[in-house]
Length: 197
Image 1 (cartoon, rainbow, N blue to C red):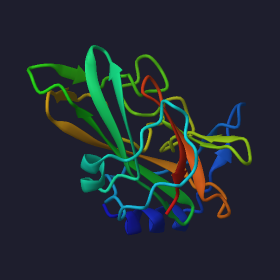
Image 2 (cartoon, rainbow, N blue to C red; image 1 turned 90 degrees about the vertical axis):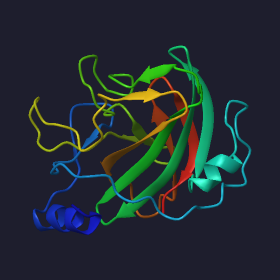
Image 3 (spheres, one colour; image 1 turned 90 degrees about the horizontal axis):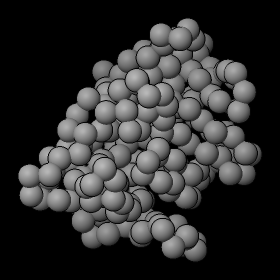
Image 4 (cartoon, one colour; image 1 turned 180 degrees about the vertical axis):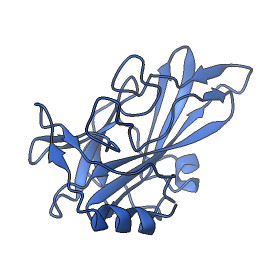
């Protein structure tokens, strides 16, 4: 299913992100979709970054990354590359890759490491933070009940040494005047000032 069809379905159904229980949590009813192609590379903002932040590396630029960082987690050395954050009408789609830099036989199991709950095997815990308006955007859901599934990648994947995994998550779009957000990955850190295209 293409991004255009997803936008048409969401718009036609009159779906708007609505407030759900506390903390500024954003939810949106949406149908399950496939990953959206990442947009063209956007230059990294020329702002001071925390010491933990890493500028886009040459390898990340080849992937079209707009932000990149190396982290160690679960005994593996990883690189997270944000390849796109694209606004499409009332939704925003975040795409990224996680690469396992240990080329030996080491593996890293995604599982619930990026989820919002212990038994949730998705990337539902990845959120967008609007620092100007003080709002957090959670991954969209395909309903409003407790069984609603996230419109995002499944986490039942193992990343072998020397390989990478492409992932995505869909959100209700921040206001049009918000051009940059922070992206929080559970266990893998926060990327600041990620541009929305």
